[in-house]
Length: 328
Ligand SMILES: [Zn+2]
Image 1 (cartoon, protein in one colour):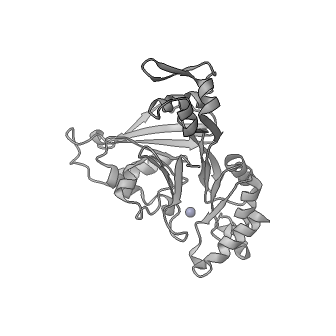
Image 2 (cartoon, helix red, strand yellow):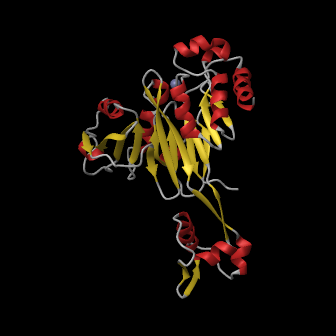
Image 3 (tube, rainbow, N blue to C red):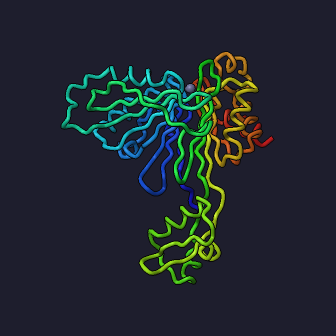
């Protein structure tokens, strides 16, 4: 099974949290959080179309400068999605630079910033290089509740958690996996080719079986025939990213609703349960609490990260505590 995307943590678990979600095809990537991005190459950063930022504590946002630096002369826009007041934070970052060398002759790089709250997008601002990155308010898109991004092959959902301040958690979900069975294709006497993309799209959109798919000029096959012999569907991949939250029933319910059934849950485990009082005071989870949440959400695997520096020598204990609670 080839997944649509390959997620990987940007740093080791004691460094800044962040997830790089790389598409297997199509030279594209997404980012969850913008902490230290040093391990990512410029080539990887240039693939990023959307970055989803949980909140703007430094360990989650200090990498913005690097991303800007690498993308500044890119033609494709950069989309940033964050919590309430996020556009102001981005604007302050942009204001810190002298930008007199950007003019009509430079690439008009655009940054589009959307603020997400419980009800959807409250505010969208655009910052363009040709306008010296001055803020321009634009009307927010209306998506279904909880939806941050809706594309043909996947969607990204979000929820607002309580970390003393609003903090977003995210779930990436592939809509429907459509695999081509090559032997079946051969039996039908059909070649592999770009036409298969149309066929897959038709399946994902739930088109009726009598839909005609054009293989090439003069060669047409019904979608039903194709599905019977050469296409296999299965549920898509789901990845959830959850960091910085108070262990409260309200937060837990929101994480379960968002991350339920995920193939991979990346969840913070900053403290050991023996330090649960400190965890509560800092508005974070313990490893055991993270494991319990993962279990209740019915995820297939848990990836523990975002460790407090106090456990430098006890990495295994954090992971073990989370996995034990998860498997319990
Ligand atoms: Zn954090």
